[in-house]
Length: 88
Image (tube, rainbow, N blue to C red; front, side, top):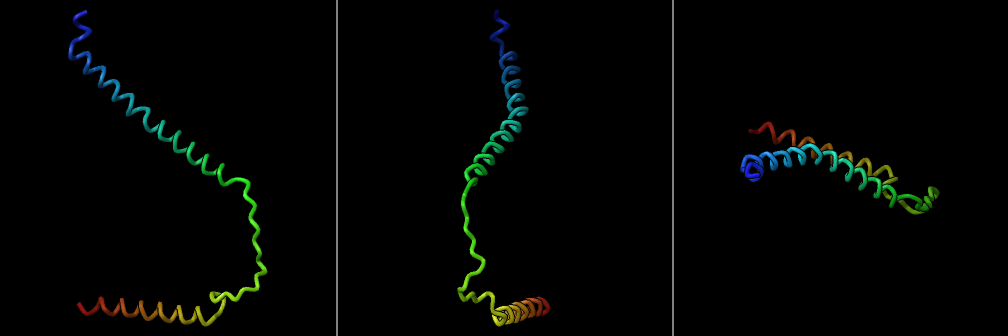
């Protein structure tokens, strides 16, 4: 009976508990993570979305001059960055 309360027995019990926690924690984390993902997907289910493709709004991204100006600014920034690296 005195051997039951020995420090070695308690240490091995605690060591066994830590081993069990290390063994089952990844599995528990995996299950809880999948449960959370399933709940998020379930929350997004059955939503009615009406997409109107034939919109008559004036969209400035659809105009070609915006793309030309954007490409010119990008090229100028790229040249400026590449030239500043050669000075050093």
